[in-house]
Length: 392
Image (cartoon, rainbow, N blue to C red; front, side, top):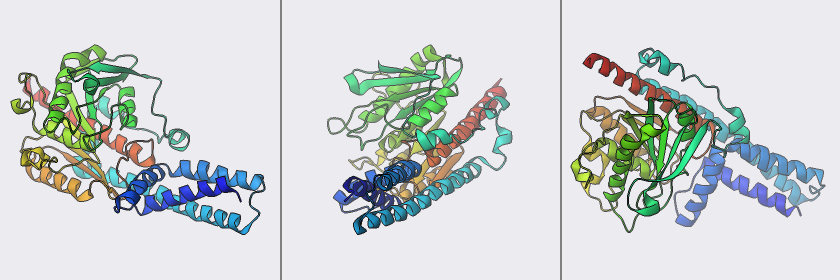
């Protein structure tokens, strides 16, 4: 029996099943569903071309398909291949949903409201080579990563990385990203790297930071760390070509919760012990598959919605309909609340086919999300420039 081939096909078939119909409970099965389903959901071409296509070709070439069970495995591979076609279609369909979300949040004429120099960088070809052959490879030759810079006194949990274009252009906007991990795990240089490298390649200065974790530290310690990073960026990011007046905050999962709080508690001395005079204002927030309810202690003030006011900054939210860790309804509720109260633009991209942590790879879906983030950022920056011109 072609045991190796059977194992490969079985894993891809199960991953495809979990990609199409993720399991929320019981926990042992849901954990397997999460990891296998996520990988296949974002990498259907990789799973189909390499795992199924090459393994099936080799099995035939080596004469392993010579028994009923081997042919049954081929039939399972064919069924999995059809499932992967559906997965890929869902990723393509989500691209359209993301584009509609930009129009809904910024207006049908949003392109005409963007400064010409910012609009020029918004037209991208879909990077098929990366999607098909290098979905795991995030680095770009034109981007330099400066690793392990200290922004606080908590050792490795207070280290950050800076990503910037090797030419070090001046006047670059800043994006600060915080990783997820349930507030008790995770590390910088792990999530949203396609976003960080893309923006850095287009002239941004991007920062990814560690922060103190549970159970030793609790809310608002993580938020305080985020604000320390904002303060650090305003003091030091100019060394890498940044304009400290333009700071976007972003986060994935727990990091999205933290980024939302940072954007809604700007310059609040309650969350800036020892650095209350530091400027922690931000231009906008970008939230990816975030957690938006209260922290584990259920204190009302730990929920982003508690802090929403009319002068909240612009928000961009993207969430998956197949997220088994954070219900889609949480993101929808926060977006609705922001739209009711805030006067700033709110872009909410609801992706029916996306799982949690869709921001790990160069996929059809996440490339569209990054395109939308760049459009959103261009609109925010143009809006800021218009305000500055009016103030003169």
